[in-house]
Image 1 (cartoon, rainbow, N blue to C red):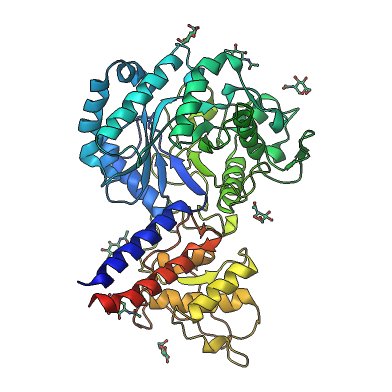
Image 2: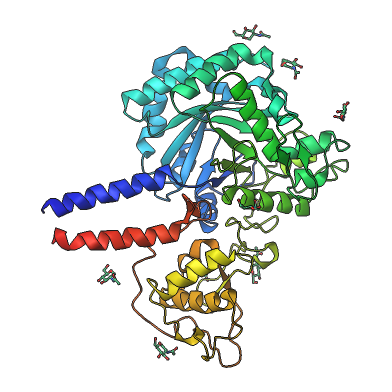
Amino acid sequence: MGSGFFRLIIATSLLLTLLDVCRGSTIGICYGRNADDLPTPDKAAQLVQLHNIKYVRIYDSNIQVLKAFANTGVELMIGVPNSDLLAFSQFQSNVDTWLKNSILPYYPATKITYITVGAEVTESSSNISAQVMPAMRNVLTALKKVGLSKKIKLSSTHSLGVLSRSFPPSAGAFNSSHASFLKPLLEFLAENQSPFMVDIYPYYAYRDSPSNVTLDYALFDASSEVIDPNTGLVYTNMLDAQIDAIYYALMALNFKTIKVMITETGWPSKGSPKETAATPDNAQTYNTNLIRHVINDTGTPAKPGERLDVYIFSLFNENRKPGLESERNWGLFYPDQTSVYNLDFTGKSSVDMITETNVTSSNGTTPTWCIASSKASELDLQNALDWACGPGNVDCRAIQPSQPCFEPDNTVSHASYAFNNYYQQNGATEIACSFGGTGIKVDKNPSYDNCIYMTTGSNKTVPSNTTAISSTSSSSTMCGVPVWIFSCFLVTFMSLLSPETR
Ligand SMILES: *[C@@H]1O[C@H](CO)[C@@H](O)[C@H](O)[C@H]1NC(C)=O
Ligand SMILES: *[C@@H]1O[C@H](CO)[C@@H](O)[C@H](O)[C@H]1NC(C)=O
Ligand SMILES: *[C@@H]1O[C@H](CO)[C@@H](O)[C@H](O)[C@H]1NC(C)=O
Ligand SMILES: *[C@@H]1O[C@H](CO)[C@@H](O)[C@H](O)[C@H]1NC(C)=O
Ligand SMILES: *[C@@H]1O[C@H](CO)[C@@H](O)[C@H](O)[C@H]1NC(C)=O
Ligand SMILES: *[C@@H]1O[C@H](CO)[C@@H](O)[C@H](O)[C@H]1NC(C)=O
Ligand SMILES: *[C@@H]1O[C@H](CO)[C@@H](O)[C@H](O)[C@H]1NC(C)=O
Ligand SMILES: *[C@@H]1O[C@H](CO)[C@@H](O)[C@H](O)[C@H]1NC(C)=O
């Protein structure tokens, strides 16, 4: 093993660091378990993986759940529940024991990246906010002792109720009665480069004052817009406005480096008779638009292009949650794991094209094809097409002028042909049809006239090695470059280096 070996190591770790530093915005899901009819954690973990969800928030550190996500690659945000804050704040040894017995045995097989210490404590009737900082410092000390304080970030989640004012966004301000709690917390977050975590629900804003908030504005259906009179910034949806209100509140206290993370948002699919907006249609619209907005890396008007990490509430309907009917109907899935409504986690395809939410989805027994999404941008499709016909090793002669698949002469049609060839030649796996989210699996043969699309199993060519890292639903771009292009460079780079290792 010469210097080439070390160069390979260095190159690889450099690229992995890059991957980490400049990954785009992410979509995760909250896995609440306040129910008596949920599937086992193992089944839930399979469901999460089936939908290519890479980030999951749980509210405790349940051992069965930690075990279920071992070796799945899913990143977990775990929680110290409010009921444990007292014990965690009182004695360092309590926290050390918890870390040793409940976390370390499962780490790093189970990827834990965040710990929330307390959840929405300002909403709690008992005065527990004073316990948060001592508990958080003890957790930090415990993590430092085992060398994990850089790998696992600490924060605490808040409701939007920490603000005394959220409109207009530029006037966003924290409620001064929480000042003694928030000031040391914000200093801690800034010092440890941890995010400010907030649960944001445009649904409640609409439900509680439908005369002041339009449904379109809450659902990201851009027909209505709101202008901040102080900044002139135009808001086309309420979530952005609420996020910016937090940013302005942070800036008003001179915390300019703290990032905002959305640890819960969503829309209920069912509610009491008075909750007329709680419908499957509205829930699907909200979450679909949310995902598209986040994945697009648009940022918010006050923070354009800023990365945004968002967790959708919730994986399952939870039948034991108290309160109005809507409280028990935030889930994307019923306890039997069937979908409440279809949701595309890639944020790319059109809503009605999605059929993959069927849990008993195809197993390779029935043939499938891969085509280009007509909703994808021309540029993304052209890039993907160029890649498939180049490094992807697809034979693209059929889409050349005067060949059978040249007409219709447009990028969607040509990309569809190329995507499908690549897909069939590479095992017809989910990943082989991702193309940065621009590919869609279909079960209808797209062949027409003399343009014959390859069918599963009809042609066995050597699979190319470029699918090692594929784009995921939750981070399709990296520094503005689709991940799959990046992964192609990674493979090329490594193959250039590898001869020296021999
Ligand atoms: C809650 O605790 C904080 C910090 O100890 C204290 O300043 C505040 O007065 C308490 N509030 C109530 C209602 O007990
Ligand atoms: C600020 O918080 C206090 C205590 O929770 C609450 O009574 C008050 O109404 C809040 N003020 C505003 C403007 O929201
Ligand atoms: C609607 O807005 C007006 C003026 O801003 C305010 O006075 C009123 O309280 C709001 N209504 C609700 C239900 O929030
Ligand atoms: C995506 O980003 C582009 C450019 O930043 C913007 O024009 C477009 O409206 C965004 N789409 C969504 C759904 O946010
Ligand atoms: C999945 O699809 C199959 C065949 O289309 C159908 O029979 C089955 O009921 C579906 N299952 C769910 C949970 O939607
Ligand atoms: C999936 O395929 C495997 C082997 O091809 C088969 O044993 C299994 O029963 C199939 N599962 C379903 C749900 O069709
Ligand atoms: C398999 O691919 C080769 C060239 O890539 C082609 O000539 C042949 O017709 C294909 N066979 C089928 C059954 O599609
Ligand atoms: C792909 O990887 C295999 C071994 O993993 C290797 O034999 C083959 O040459 C590689 N193909 C390409 C195109 O790099």
